Image (cartoon, rainbow, N blue to C red; front, side, top):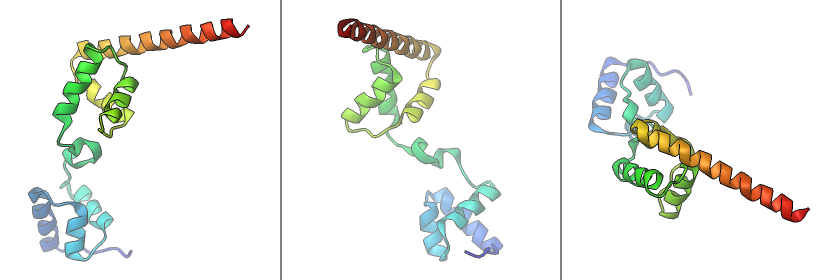
Length: 136
């Protein structure tokens, strides 16, 4: 695609539509441009909002955070186990998203998550030693 020369009215239109909650793709379709062109303008002009990015736009983070805390504090799960549990519940997430959410939680939850991960690792190592011992 060739470089688009943005007019002031187009910039104002993009800003207004983003404030209304429109997506880059919607705005691009309305202007007859590519999504990346609109995104680039928004980024260069400072119209972007960190809350618009990827998984952070989820509307159900409060419910997920509550479930993550319960899994870590009550069920003594590691972050990897929490992700597996959420997937079984039909909530699609990834390790990095949950890890970032745990980093925003109180220090006691972060500490418990690291303790749970260490316990899980020790348990796995113990089971591996038993298997090796049985095989010998």
